[in-house]
Length: 298
Image (cartoon, rainbow, N blue to C red; front, side, top):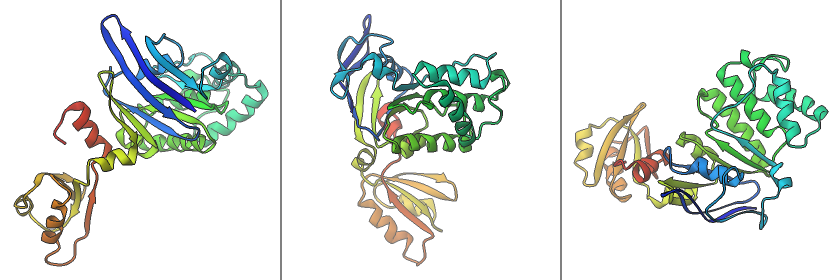
């Protein structure tokens, strides 16, 4: 089990990380979210001992992370770094051997990984010939080919289209199923919601929210309704407690002051019978992020 207790980091008079606490068990995924500069990357660098902590503790199975255990950590940095003139095989085997993997095993595993991630190219191709998306996949392969016990992913989906994002997510789910502890940061709130068992939300280095992803959403109440029905916005606004209405695909999203308001809206829209879609839900993680971190109304 990976654990952070009362972690702090100061850069001169800037308090970059403020009393951070988190626990990640084997087979769990933690989403670490916040605006740029919130302390996410700084936290990753302290975990990896790239920079020293100011105070607190970082432990794995109750002990400081040893050099041997560091070899079992996979890290995908936000700043991508591949040697452009090397072949894919040379690059990935280099990463694999750094983590103690035998060259022959890595060579065999590489082809399997390239197939699963649908990389366009051959192991013998130069990295510089790869598209941005395929280069990102190769860097992920280099991060996980040795099947890490603990995985740190800093903005792993940046620049990927929806299809390739889902391919990457599936591999993260597979690593989770195999028992890896995973922590990742992303500005893709939908992706965080899909992958994370728990999350920690940071603002200016301090924890705003922490806990189970579902429990955090439900704690805000079911104050959002997705509606597809033949009724005018004016009629909906006449219901006391309707805060806002916005178009969303074929329907509308209605934000309400209290979950009980949903009963009045349902009674109104169903008065004439059939309603194609009425779904009362907790706010999305994106809505919560905007409310708690960005400071928006929703």
